Image (cartoon, rainbow, N blue to C red; front, side, top):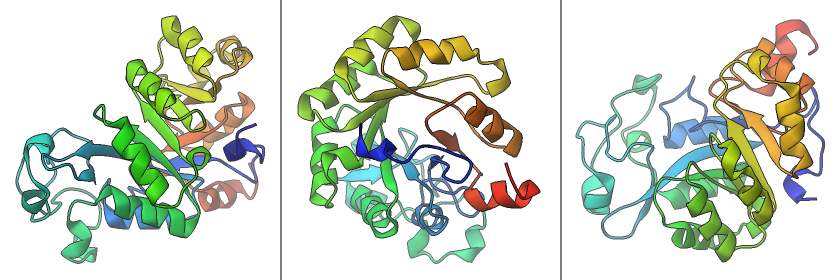
Length: 253
């Protein structure tokens, strides 16, 4: 069994993935959002990684800096240009320093994950899997201590060629590619089913019988998280939930 899943997911041990950090308290994909997810002891902290024109890995969801004070294409801009920008959208902007609101380096995100003991859950936004894996290892993570995810199955095949140990995750998986993913081993999927009450238990069982871990997007309410546990899902992407919220909602799940 992959060491990421040695402890079973239960009401007392929820495998929350903070999507782009903990967004209720800070802008998405910002240094503060990653730190807040760490403070909350989230199982994993998710980010999106891209490469600049001069080969620097940064955390940015969109192809350009849409939420900053200037909209620049990441792949066509140098780090020297991008580091000057500041986030101008998101929660509690006035609470943070100027430095807090710059574009995060991927290595800074990894340092935060390592400091707090959260799993780096990394979405590849470009086909730079080798550079990303090298950065993960330089940051002190073993290959089986991180997750590499993508909407692109071919990029996950590249990841598997680079590393036989890293866990790979196919975002919004398609049924006709599940056998291929399962053949790569040590893999999981998410389906784009916003309401977990609309997901068939048989559908989940079928994927699990293939050896795949399964999750849905996203667990953003106590009710949905409870349903995900009932369905036997393996981890829970979330934009807003954490363990304390689940406990305080009713005293128990």
